[in-house]
Length: 275
Image (cartoon, rainbow, N blue to C red; front, side):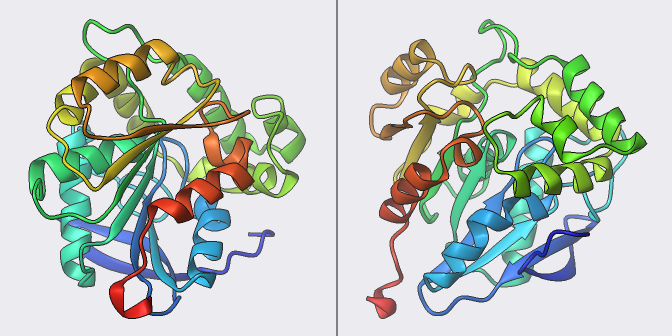
């Protein structure tokens, strides 16, 4: 990899799979787990993880199942409950203490599923960044399966930062290059079946039972959590705050990192001993 990543690579067995992790040693501010999106292997979160570690947090970023160097399970095992069970297993195996969980897109859905299914009354801060609000009776995910596969196949043939820029014109060059280098590690079955889940698994069923501490962070101009969906979310669970990042679409931290990170560090409390 030509882009320098500051996280330390390791592997751990959990929920029947071998998971690859990037870990960032911080200090005594607390544990943070970052869950990336559908085609975002762990290195793509380096630009979020590294500054959090600099603020004293111990950060873990896994390759989700079927991405990067984490095992790809058999077909049919890319449901939200499968991903959530991975998170539960990783937290147990790593000995994380009520970690704050930052999930983007698919990762936000996974964080919600983990909290709802495994620890509804005892979790750290959940930061759900632009979770897909598509699902049964709510329309389809705005990026088509064909668009995902077009990018994936280009990566497997060998792509460049400039070719990736066509899809993400607002991104910094470093992040474009990084995506060009790691996207090919995503298993096609993982992408296809997870994309189907965006349309046949209902995020609102998870959202409605979530308890604080949690916040949903959306891109102000995101088609994934448009204003109409944000309004419906606010009614479905009025206890969870919803905040918007200006000048950001669905890829919130990539589109406007400065405003996103300002919000993020206000949301994630430091451990009492670090105060």
